[in-house]
Image 1 (cartoon, rainbow, N blue to C red):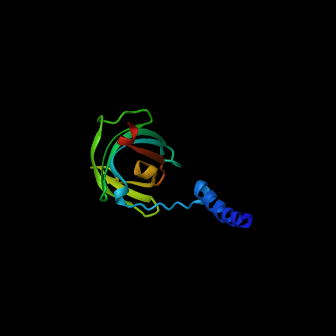
Image 2 (image 1 turned 60 degrees about the vertical axis):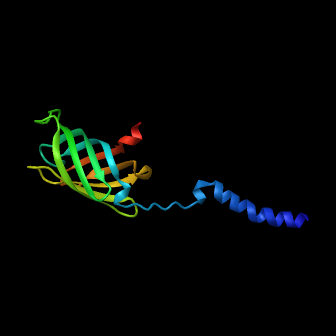
Image 3 (image 1 turned 30 degrees about the vertical axis):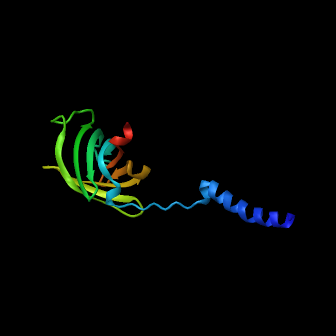
Length: 152
C-alpha cells in the first residue's frame, strides 16, 4: 500500500508542479493582423536628425486606428524642439500594417507632403498594447500605444 502511494505521488507531484509553475509552461504567442484592432492612444518620444548638426527633440501623441485587416489610419500632434505644429492635429494619415505570428510587426503611414512613417513594433497584452521604434535615418524615436478600451 505504501509503495502504491509513493508511485502515485511520484507521478502526480511533478505534473502538479508543472501545472502550477508558470515558468514550467511554455507559452506560444500566435498573432495576426486581427490581433491589433481598434483605437490606440500612442505616446511618441525621441530625437530626429541624430548625427547631424541640427538634431530635433520630438514628443507627441497620436490616435492610431487598426482595422484588424491590415489597414491603419493616424491623427497626431507632434512637438519639435518645443515648437508646436502648424495645425493642432495632423489628420489623414493612412497606410498598412502587418502583424507576424510571433507578434512582431511593421506599419507604414503616409501623410500628404511628408515622407512615410515606418514603425517596427511588438504587440503585447493580448493585442491591447504595442511598443515600437521609428525606422528612419537619424531617428531615435519610440512609440508606445495602448488600446483605448484597456484604459477604462
